[in-house]
Amino acid sequence: MRIIFCYSLLLILFACGSTKQINDIEDITPDWVKNYPVSENYYTGIGIANKSKNPVNYIQVAQQNALQNLASQIKVNIATQSVFVQMEREYGFEEEFKSDIKIKAEEHLQGYELKGTHQAGDEYWVYYSLSKRKYTEVRQARMEEAMEQAKTLLSFTTHQHSPKERYVHFVKALEVLKPFLSEPLACQIDGRNVFLGSEIIAQFRSFMDNFRILSLNKKVKVMLGDKLGELKFAVEFNKTRVENIPLIFASDLLDVKPFSNSTDENGLFIAIVPKISSTENVQKMQVGLNIEDWLKEATTDNFTQKLARGVKSHQITMPIYVYTPLVYVQSKEKYFGTLYRSQDLKFAAETALNKLGFSPTGRKDEAELFMQIEANTEKGRTQTGQKMFTAFLNMSIQVKDKNQMIVFSEQLNKLKGIQLSFEQANTSAYEKAQEELNKSIIPNFVNSFIQK
Image (cartoon, rainbow, N blue to C red; front, side, top):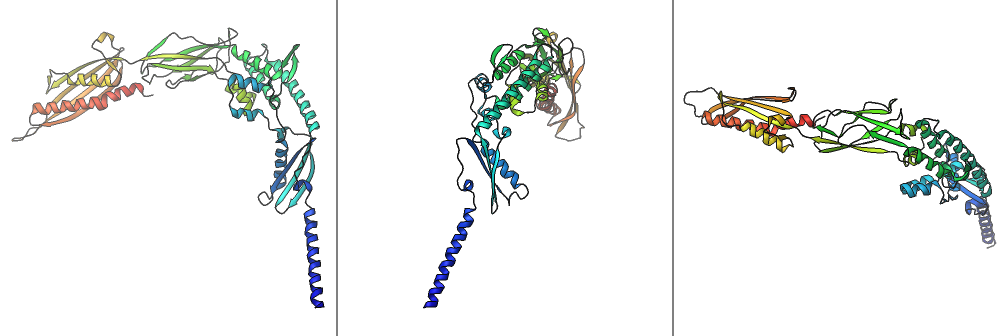
């Protein structure tokens, strides 16, 4: 009995010792791991990384997570005098831009302190702390420095500099202010009290409004299939023509090819439309300033580019009036070498042209194109006692313009007609020729105008 009692006592003492050892191990865990620190005077950032998932860089991962956690506590208030509010009101920026304007605070954190690290199994913990007062002081200093840089850049946007230089410096001035565009940025420029971000936008808009694109072309009316040739435009700035200004063209229907890279010394820009290939009556092109390369030279920052694109430049819409050609069709249709009294092929060609949007005309003097159809049949070989007779039709189609230039030609040989008599075989061969005109030849002719 005594032995049993002693054995039980040892078990109790061992259990108590084990519990005390476990409690000692738990006590090693820092309080900031057990309970997230909250302070009125400090921002707190705690980051965790899994060592098995990040065996090489788990420390850096935990540090970055801690900084992101720290930054998430820093509120970015958007002042009513800020650029963001102005751009949202005037240009209707989408919701996604709001997340861009709220600059990622972790990119601008300074003065944070490492308060501790901890490892437990596969987990590695990092604890950062940042004084709210110190953060405010550092941010204010950085903001004032950025404002001075922006004002210096703004000095390069005056009329002494080229339009491209002015544009680039407007964009650069916005870029250096990017982390602070949610602030009013009150300052003085030339003795005036201004909000710097809004002032830059206002000057930028005024600068872009001074550009004007002029079309130097009279009302353009062109026939389908023709080359439109050169189109001339001019660019003015403050009512004076300027050189080295690139233009861009956009059209759903017209194939516009810039002949110039930018305006010449006389402020002129030339574009070419090689061929009108759509049957739409009115075809439009939009002409605008091609300042995308200027923008990319100024900044590679996506948000700043979006902001700059919100400052619109002048553009124009130029209509091109397109008409289909009047076609005069004539035919010589022979019946075994004798001129056929009917003109079935002429009628079939005119019907097919009408279906495809081309207008046949009976007046030769008003036509732009002249279609000549020539056809003749010949008898097939005869045999004594045969009951079926064969006729072969040869047909040529040629289309010329007013200058007698051939714009289309087609030749069909040996279209066969088989019937109970040569007369009926001739009719059958002509019917096949009409079918070829309707289904193949006239569509090919029309496609020669609308295909590029």
